[in-house]
Image 1 (cartoon, rainbow, N blue to C red):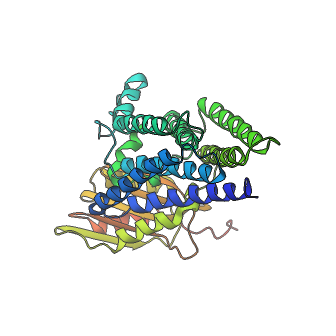
Image 2: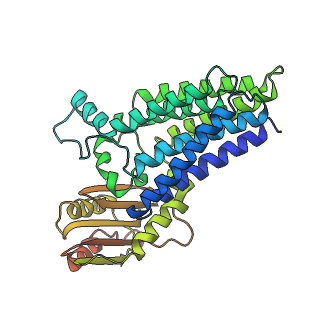
Image 3: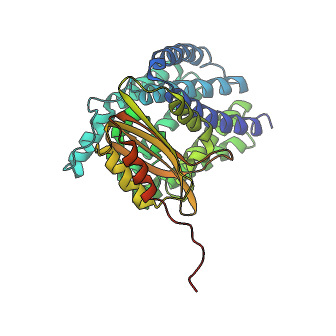
Length: 363
């Protein structure tokens, strides 16, 4: 149990909690980002010190320490990107006429500094851990790097679920590089490669001659890789990934709803008691994004649509509409902020996109 069950449970918990924590911190007011990054940077320094100190430790404790170091290093990378501190030189939506390699160049420019930061971090971890016995920290980071790069490419090439609800408003322009389609040719290679690698790690962990260090380290790495494969499947299966982290997304929405509007900004809020037609709702969001109901309008909400729920956002002229799994206390609603907001027009637009309840076939 010490070598297998506990590492699996730890990897599951830290994967779920750390993702939710980063989403939660990223949903706080932007004035808090400096403090969040300062705390994350302090943890990173401690993690690199811990990685160097444990690089010669080939015990169970060394494996646990190395795994945690790799996760903390990756957490800094993720938080610095989602807060907008380390992204890329291109900070606008992809030009509408950009296709093929030109579109790929714009996409790379949008995340270039982020990718370079990953390379620098990988070099630092390699410098302090490789060829010293305990390389768990480096391989933890490498797995996260490889599988996240694969996920980025799959989202760029096209998948069913783009997870755009995880993007904060200041990064909504990145959605212009996403493609929605059932699947792409890279996806089978991604999940097959990840599954095979995870299986090999689990085989190494369960080998009769595996030392406690190898069993623990391989189990931690194998579980992390299996979870990354699961994240890939969530990109194409008709399942709402938000269900796992709705506590962090709900906190972001609650803060935005309770915030007082800035001077000159008006607020619109309404309950959406009747299910919406998804196509009509998308049309309303598009009109809001192009300024039909006020300048610089930002909007978010959740609504029933068909047999399920959707969450939607408008920010910086971009729209987002995705599947959503509500908690028991959630109520369908919309909140918008903007200058010169046409509240009557928005009320009429949302009323028009409601679906009348089905009462049965006519006699």
